[in-house]
Every structure is written in C-alpha cells, then in structure tokens.
Image 1 (cartoon, rainbow, N blue to C red):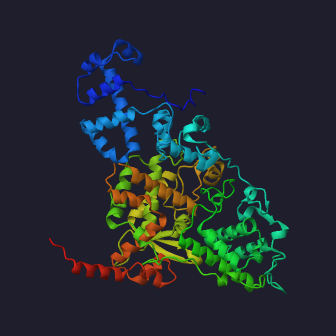
Image 2: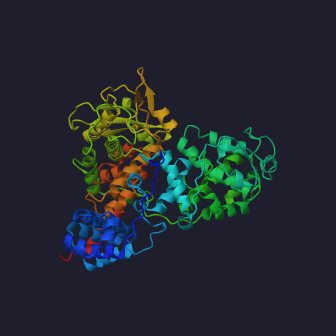
Image 3: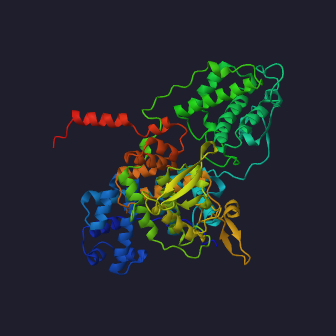
Length: 619
C-alpha cells in the first residue's frame, strides 16, 4: 500500500555533460559519437546507459521534460517548440531556452512548476484531466474543494490524496501552507450575535438572533396590529420568503440578499434590521461595493463551514439588484404593518452603465462555430465517435473506459436540446420523456419534427419543437442509460447522468437495485446547477483540446459559454432566418414582446449598413 500511494516522482538532475549531449542530439550528431566523446565510463554506469538506444531514450526524455517546463513558464513559446519537436529542427534560440530551463534550481518545488516534474505519471496524468497543470493550481484546487477534493478526479483515491497533501505540506516553505478545510455538513442551528467570526452561516442555520438585536423592540416597528405573526426580524424574513415557496429560483435569489443584510446588521453595524435608518442603508450600499475579505469565499455547499456570503466583489448591476430587493422587502414589511417606514426609499440606486442591449446577445455562438460544434460530423460527433455506444445500460463510474464517450454523448444531447429550442437550463433539467411526442405529418411541416412541452417561468407551459438531429442524439443518450426511448409514457428525465459519482447523495438519487442486486440508473434528471456544470466542463475541455480545428477566438468564446448563451444562440439564429417576433416570443416563453424584440436589433443592422456605405471596401 505504501508503494501504491507513493506519489512523488524522482527529481531529474542534469549535468553539463547532459547539456552538451542534448545540444549534439538536437543538432543531429550521431548517437554513437555522443556516447564516445561526451560521457566517461563512470557517468554512463551511474546513469545505467550502455547502448546508443538507451542514450537516445534518456536525451529524448530530457528534451520533453524541458520543453514542458519552458511551455508552462512561457506559453508564447509553445507553438514554436511544438513545431521544432514535430519536424526535429532545433534552432539555437530554442536549444538555449531548454538549457536555461534545465540550469534552474530543481532542488525545491516552485508554484509554477508543472505537476509532471514532481509527481508520478499515474498521478499527474489524471490531474491534467481536471485542467491541473501546475503545483499552484493543485494547491488552489485542494484549498477550494476541502477535505474531499479528490472525489471528482478519476483513479485518485483517498490514499493518494492524503499522500499528495503530505507532500505539499512538506514543501510549504516554497509552495505556501496548505489548509484543507473539513467540509462535514453543519446542521446545528446557531444563535446569531455580533461575533460573526464563529457563526457566519447561511439563513437556514440561524436558529435565532441574540435578543438585543433580534428586532422585537426595533425602533422602526409599527404600532398597532401587524398582519403577519412575526415576532422578530428573522421570522419576518422567513414570512417574506415563504411567499415565493413555489418559485425556487426567485426564493434563492431573494434569500441570498436578505441573509447578507441580516448578517451585516448584526455583525457589522450591530443593530437590529428593524432599527436601521437611511444612513445605515447608505453604509450597506458601500459595503456591497467593497465587502470585507472575510465575507468572500469559494462556491461551496451551504452546509460547509467554508461557506461565505459573497463569492467575489459584486458588479455594479448586482449591487443595484441587491438594493432593489431590499427596497421591495422593506416596502412589504411596511405594507403588512411590521415596520413604520421604509428607509430604502431615500437611498438612490448604485450607478450602473446602461448597456446598448440589456440581453447579452453577444454571448451567442456565431453560426459558423455552432455548425462546427454540433453539425453532422462536427466536433461533438467526432468526440462521440471515439467511443462505441454501450449496450449494457449499466451505471458507469469515472474509472470506466466507456465513461468519456457516454459523457460526450450526454453533452451533445444537452447542447442540441438547449441550442435548438432556446430552453432555459431549469426547463431542460426538468423536461420529461412523457412530454415529448412526434408532430403529426401535415402539409408544410418537415418530416421528423417533434414537440416538447416545457414548464417555464410563472408556471406556464409552452411548446417547443425539436428537429430529428436532437431526437437522434437523445436516443443515443438513452441507449447509454439502458432506458427505452420509444416508451412515450415514461416519466423519466430527457437528460440524466450516466456516470454516477461515488458519493452517497449521488448514488441514492441516480441508482436503484434490481431483484438480483444489480445497480441500474433511475433516470432522475439533473439539478439546474448540475446541468450547468456538465455543459461548461465539456465545452471547456473542447476549447482546451489542441487537436480540434478551432481558432483562438472560438476557443476563448467556448471557455465562457453558459447554458443561457445557447438560448441566445437559438434566438439570434432564429432572427437571422427571419422568424416572426411573435412566434419567437412564444418559443422563448417571454412575457413581453419587447423582450423578444431585443434580439432583432434592427438599429444595429441599419447602423452597420450605413457604415459600410461610408467606408466601402477598396477591393
């Protein structure tokens, strides 16, 4: 077991003779000449080199190791060094870069060192699949994800994870201290008091507020009969959020803003929420623009001890949204006679720059990139074709050889579903097979078209239409799951995980046992966040795959694509093909035609046409 968990690799040390030999090798000097002229017998015995073939293998490994160091230290040299290695043509400048990299002090690891320089291949190869290239990235990854950081990484168990942590902690002098937080869920309720250093927790973990600050005797409490049964500020917040119990997304957004304000009132301003005045609201607005660093942390489960109210400094639009939510909340408190007045009425909104178009339509994928990504024999088809479709339908783990293919086929189905219907990620996540059916054949309707009923915002159903390509991708995905796509009455999710993590929560949700004890997939769908992670992770891997024919600008665009960008993609392509605005409004589920008209952007088209006349093409 100790040998199995030996993660550190032997540190290569190069001598001046190695530098000279490498120069000769890169300049195509015969290996036999290098062996006889550069090394003495003692050096060859120490290195275990007896034949020209062994020397060539040693020098080629040295070359590759140094090329990797140079590329990570200076990415601008990656292409030129790759060409040099591909064509075996090494100019003097390239050789000098390698020698300088080899001449550095390798005795202690540095943050910018590649993981391959210090860890064994069985470890660094699987880390690279998670885009962990350097020791600094590994250090940050562990600190971000806490005690169970290794779970999403295939072929990396708890033994290797703890060995890596010990190795990093042993080199804290150069890599910095490694703090691995314990992510054991926190379930006990706390009493909120001004000492937030020990109880900075989300709203659902607040059992009560210390009596002096709970708002039961707040200065702004309204006299007379109150229309709600709230005795204090915490109960008033809970009563307000209960109004949105059937609108999960809205409830989460409002809860985030209200819990931030409650924590700030108690822990920073040291006053009850029902005692704040306009000057307090102005100070909170300043706090939103520059939160205390101790309030900022990575996105983790809300039950984690590392949870923090902010994931980073808020943009101006987010600050304005927070003020609007709080102003509406206080207006409701005044309306139900819990408060006597609304201090936010006198607070102006944070200044924000007005966008030319409120919807971020520029995030939509251009037609050429969209076709290259999802078209027949496009990038996703090429990636899916590398792995055959599994006919077993058994649940997979990240270690299975079929897992990458099943994941790509799932991602292809998800990208096509969102990009060809304009569905929101919440709508796609809860779409069921029983809501999908073929469109009856009729004149003027292309054959193979299907219709899908989606439950969207405001609990309103709408119908979208899927071309045969989307249906074909869904059928293949269902084959991976082992479910019968042709059974139209199944209340199974259209998109469901096929690679189930080893966590108890994931297995309880997505696996069930048959009578013979075999595990099968339940067909439960993704959460909206889970679907987001699936799409962004897949597109990021595509963007970083150097073997795929993508331009630099296209790769950068794919790195920032979100599910909502695929909705923009559908809308902009529909407008480009002259789809009527009222039809597009119904397909997108917009409450107002004015929102849909933002995609049309006729003013922009007219502006481009006018500029084209002003500056004609000289050719």
